[in-house]
Amino acid sequence: MRSLFALSFALCLLGSAPQSAVAQTPQEPEATTIEEVVVLARRSGAPMWTVSRGDSTLILVGAITGIPRDLEWRPDDLEAAAARSQQILTPQEGRASVTDLLRVIWRIRTIARMPRGQTSADWLTPDWQARLDAVMAGERNQDWRTRSLLILGFDLMQDKAGYTGRRGGDDAMDVVRRAARRARVETRPVGTVRGDELIDSLIEAPQSAHVPCVEAAIAAAEQGPDAARERAEDWRARRVAEVVASPIDRALNQCWPWGDPEIAPQLHQQWAAAIETALISPGVTMGVAPIRLLAEEGGVLDGLEARGFEVDGPEWRAEAPAAVAPDVDEVDSEKGV
Image (cartoon, helix red, strand yellow):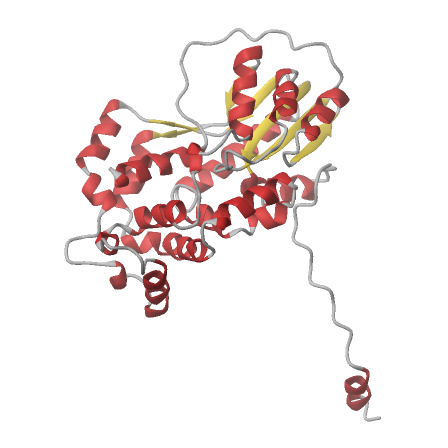
């Protein structure tokens, strides 16, 4: 059951679940100015950036999952801003059929366990295995040694680093979806990923493909259960670079599906195409995306700035280390003084 939970947890990392095929009739948003929408959105405290082209304005909200339920922020303001937008962009949908789900159940051992006779020590270097042993020292049951590295990575984030995933408090994605549903604002996922592709990538990936995931998860686990709260507090304070550099976000970026070499490029390309479309659509479009997708080096925000757009919002790059002035005596010595 833990393995099934971890797998469903992984599927949720795409940030969305399949939605009803019944189309909603969008209603005209409440009359307001673009400036009012932006002010409302920013007042919520969630990290966000605005980009404009002509009469098109794009608000990009950087979301994280795993927000502690007692973390205070102002979701009502984000909900009000979303209700006044012309359209909402949400993360990709993973579309799985009944056949896909049956394949998961049928192959659950392949996905959740190591090949027979193997343990994590067969795949991790001695140094990483020693770090894993230290993190798991208090465990009475030793079956973690034979879990697949992917499932072990998710379990480490959940049990040791305090990451609750979609089981945490309302995050920006939850708030915006709820607002769109209530206000009947047109909501459009930026793309889809076929269920058979997702399942194939889970079943066929060798254990070696998940080594970066479990190493990053070990690093997150070493920070202890406060790692998730510190990350959430950085998010609320709009310390964007710190969130992206947090051990949990580093692990999520290495683990399936974002770490999959075939799935991950699709996710990035679909977001890039959706943003390009939004910038030629009149009115206000709100897009909610994983914050690391937006703010990572070479990510969406870097790409927009490189194309000449003015990106208005919190700083997303880590500060460069200050240059250290050379010692006067050393300079004189080099000059032969």
